[in-house]
Image (spheres, rainbow, N blue to C red):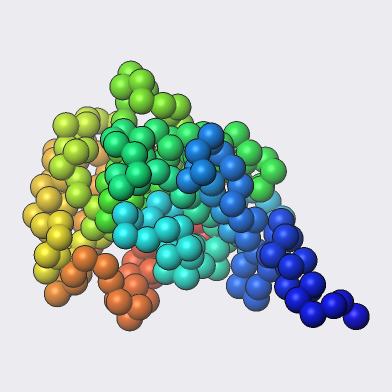
Length: 242
């Protein structure tokens, strides 16, 4: 029998933790800063083939742990492999530090795709609030901007992120982009996502907006439960996931 507390210590030191819904390899370092770590979250069942990957980016108001249940678990339940990333926020480092970190995390995930049985050609990026803005920038930023390593993104899903910084990046040939935004958002005006979607379509890109009537900045669990079937339908239509 372990002395009191020893079993808890061993669990804390374990590199991979398991639960009924997922397994998580936590705090993998992808950069040189204390914040530049990520978790890889996937099904506890053995992978029989390569699966799509998703880079999940939290907003400024919470760390990566704040989005595990809200975003990561539903994706894992549909057999996606999630890289849930931490990064230097605007509170700790000036722009473009956050974007540089996210690009580096995306490159790390792509470079280690074989380790986690991820299809390198099917890596998405998803974020909420400021993380949604970063997701848009990752999917839309040209390599010529020289802000960090750029990988090919299969699709972008933006939850109520401000797209203003990305509007000047609109051009033909971008990955499919899904914006999800509440029409009563008091923080990021809904019209910004309307305008982005309109401009993307005008450029010939694949873009769609899901408006949430009465939705504010951040959705309640019941709103998310109604949104996920629409998100997975959107992905399946683009031959992403099953």
